[in-house]
Length: 476
Image (cartoon, rainbow, N blue to C red; front, top):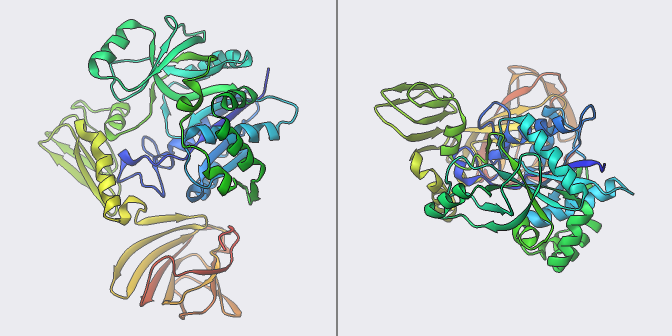
């Protein structure tokens, strides 16, 4: 039997889960249903497939999320087989293609079976998932391109469907007749009644060589561009950077449109495992446990005379009184209030914020970096105050600023500060001043997180006023 290589696709933005999900920290990296992120839950789930041997997934993500991926893998205790960086988004077909070449390169003389998984789905029944993968792997070994079809529980109009050749059996892969677009309600009801339709999960299983052969047959230009992008890829720390100029020439196509709808080798394995794509706040409400009034919440929340509502409180107490069917999401810098039936329309708010150039689309007030995080807690004309946390053993780049001076006050821990040609330790309740134009670097030499307050002052306080001279994270 061929080696199994999980491929985790982690390039989505999750805009329907705004304001918690934002482009620089989208939903797959957030604790939506548990304290662990959806990405970390996916990492843990695939470990049930490898028996006694841990599986090292290939992860395809983008430049902006590379350190999030690395850090969350570290926290989850999973060593990735590779982290492939897309220079720009080109949908799932090119992402899977470069992962296929990476898997073949890592396992010379073998033809790995790729288990392609989105990073932001929820599966409640892991044993059922493991059984379905075992069934699918048998079909993939025989040259089939397997997709997993979610056994529908109701006539859903928000998902695409897969029509199988016959009624689906839980222990078999059935040939696919066609992939269907999102239907209207009457059509969805007919699909449910027919018994041979499933929801399209976006999860796949196939041999690397078979997928590349089908890609060459149906999308030769994409095959050529992806092969060239992989062949010219450069290693950067633990990341593999695909060549931008060749990858950019790829058409932006999903694997469904590029291959699965055209191939004659498509089969579907039914999956009944408590699946959700957690695609909107209404879906989050559906998968979480409810109280007797149908409410569910995360954070500091109170309900009084309210029903069937969901609240996510990140920073403060949120109370609902005398309402029903609401979604309330509270973050440090934005609050969303929506009717559950309109949860899909949150994307329209995100589109409007983009059109206005609002920062709330991309960044949270608290911003994560490979060395830790900072939280902009106050700002005004010519000043800004940040709370900075530096991980043990981590350090910021050697840098300078043209337009701002900085004053650092250590709250807890010990800082090692390079200022010009000198280096000194700054302990709790001590401070240091960084003049405009002075080279400086901040390190945490201790074993506990370093917390400090930074006061910036100057004519321009943007994050792009950073000139880096040295950086262990390759950002110079």
